[in-house]
Length: 177
Image (tube, rainbow, N blue to C red):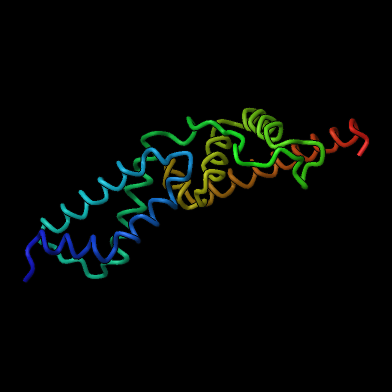
């Protein structure tokens, strides 16, 4: 029977890429600074489980679940609604095809303003969704049911689409395109 240290080293050796993948899935570019903290918390949780003497029946599934739930807990602690919506600095400085006449920075500003006009719950839900969370993850993050999270996300996205569509049409009329 392997020692706790040997079992831990084997888990890290076999599943470190899976842990990194799960963490990247949750910690988008906006939370890259949290990745080392999340990774340490995942490793601590695995170490603790191995110390409990309980066997891990399906290690890949267990490690992935621990990585996802730990990452979600860390992001929840730091609050996705506090992360600002910013324009992508690598975006080309040309109008986007979907919004003729709107440059990426202008689009981001308009979207940020539109988000501010949503209800607080809808804003939190859609910001988390835009950050890459699924409706299931958003539900867990805020303690909502999956249907409530899905409803808030889609309702907010529909409102944003309408507002951005109106802005795009206004801008086309103004520029004559």
